[in-house]
Image 1 (cartoon, rainbow, N blue to C red):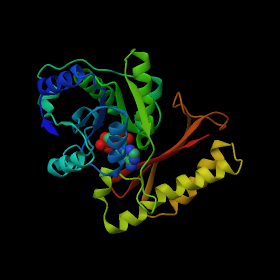
Image 2: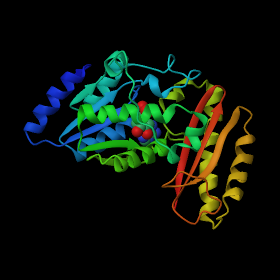
Image 3: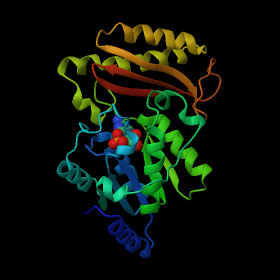
Length: 280
Ligand code: AMP
């Protein structure tokens, strides 16, 4: 496995792989890797011949008051993890390699980014779409792998690829959870012991919402109210949003009569965590 930090080096290794008729898979990440990222790398390994993992804490997708500086980083540990899963190449650029002086081109999306995290984090998806576009242009993958953990992001990327006629297959991978149900996240490391316990309220409320729907409840408000009550019973939790949206448009719906997404964002202390499930 190689670790490179420049666009030119990535292009060189990908070119070599393609010359040997290898298919190329890309797993974009911000690093501090865990089993959730691992499931994407494993899927990429099974699906493609040359697996590239990008590790880049993308400044453009963080708002001015967000955790860009404190976001956890550990390249050595990440590299060992990627190698153990059979990745071929890690791309770990400095921000200056991705955004040279005078950088002024962006990829922006309407509709799908208006709700959920797009509403709470106004610059987020412009940063995500722009950096993923750049990574697609640099790595030129046949397949790219994204987690359902970030369900809105997955929908946005699929939509972008379709809108802009990119010849890349987007593969969505299920949420990987801790044994007690908490969705794995690099941000879980911010939690104190008490907050870690309190954070279980996210997966518990998602389970409650899913079970309420499975029992026949189609009224979104009824499902959301039940979940809100449960989350509010946890003193360390503060709701950012609890919403049910159409799976394709990411717009809120009142009746769950089509493929939908139940998504929540909750602050546990200062840490903002997300979770979701599909309602079919
Ligand atoms: P991040 O490093 O948080 O930007 O995540 C990189 C990729 O890993 C994204 O496609 C995430 O959706 C995915 N991912 C993060 N956590 C999980 C998880 N618990 N289960 C599945 N995929 C995940």
